[in-house]
Length: 205
Image (cartoon, rainbow, N blue to C red; front, side, top):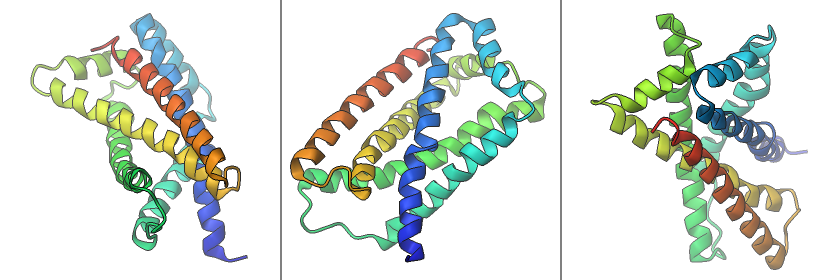
């Protein structure tokens, strides 16, 4: 089997499992922001109480995530838009690639802002206070809010629209009718996840 063909299949798969599933799980956890600082911090810190937590994150999330991201950047320079694509398909094609780069930058900043930065400064564990203070900062709060909004929209779009390419790549949706159905489902998933994320962020807005 051609190695590049296999890498493309792995790239497609990792975008859904485990990276996409982790995104959904992560957005679910953010709903606890509405329960207040004590509950939110307890829920988030509860995951890290396990001695295997860091290994799970690195092996199950971070390695597949960065493989998906950097191989995706490589594909940006190798792939060509199919001439048969409609205008809307062309738009989705480029939005998928632009959002991928944007989300990668957001994730790096997010890991630094919520994990590495607090750990270095000795304030790790007070997740609710760290997020809420960042949003409320009179000087940089508006920038933080804008970055989070764009990052969340980009991540949710990239995952939802990625379901389209996943289904086509793996032969799940090959006919025009099936592709339309998948696109409708992915749009509904986008609305649900984006709505959930915005509702969660409204707790500290």
